[in-house]
Length: 401
Image 1 (cartoon, rainbow, N blue to C red):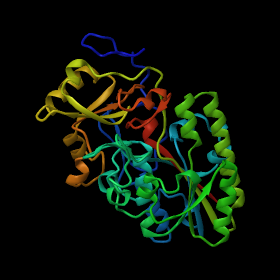
Image 2 (image 1 turned 120 degrees about the vertical axis):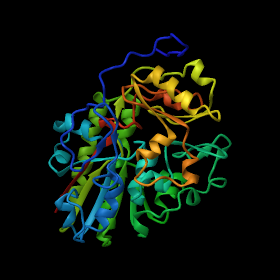
Image 3 (image 1 turned 90 degrees about the horizontal axis):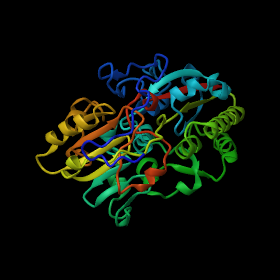
């Protein structure tokens, strides 16, 4: 039920912790901040932000060992992103994913926060969030909170007031003009311009066209093709991780099989994802009145909620949040998140740091934190954004012809 979070009011009871989601030893060495701490991205190892630089440089002696062998020896390469396919969810449902399960590879880490806007930008640019500046799904800007996926602020379309190429100036794919096989309706969107600027979009309307379009660009001799499919994430958000989700996993596995079938000799397919999923069945937690009175704004997402507080109130709000929510969330100040390297091994620029809030509520249990300005989140059944194992680990697997 919805909790008003007045002092003494009940919060949704914590379910079994998702931080201990069962995953095999990953191929990299992600850091974990204590036995009950968050899984931190392995930015200097097997991390989503390192995938594209590793694949594009796969012929060099420095290509990391965590890149599957099938990808390292390929003459042509297709990188497929299955949005929302976490490694833990994949492991638990291998019988539904015979093709993907037969591919070689393992788990790598996503980035922080584990949200599509941030993770896809890190994947495409090869940069940590601190470096590319897309630090969340809803990001604070001088013109109001920017919804990155829609590229809107409270006043509407923000493409002119917040030009995507200035907000995120780094070119994708190391500056190469790679073909991108993705939904046709994404062409020209603010987020597409922010993270895929300068690429050649090959738009598909239905999933049945993905393999057809990939085969076409491979036949043109393209050495590297980026493909994106969002069905797994969509159905998880809408229905949770039940029978509809499992049906979609079967469909995604068929898509992978179709892509393998169209690969020419010497080509390989690499499959990865941007984040995993956690079912959150309880209504989002509303801040207590004591905390809310010192909060001047909210950004981020339900499982990585930034609180923007009155000047001088950061430490006080952090202590109150730890007392109120420490059993279901990790509570960190902006300074702690930066110093602990959540957003990358180097600190963000002052311009990027200004996009962060002052105190973060990062869910470690199956809960989310409410933002009245983002009512669309109320409809979500499965969510992501936090640094639990279920959300942080994603697959990096490959097979070749």
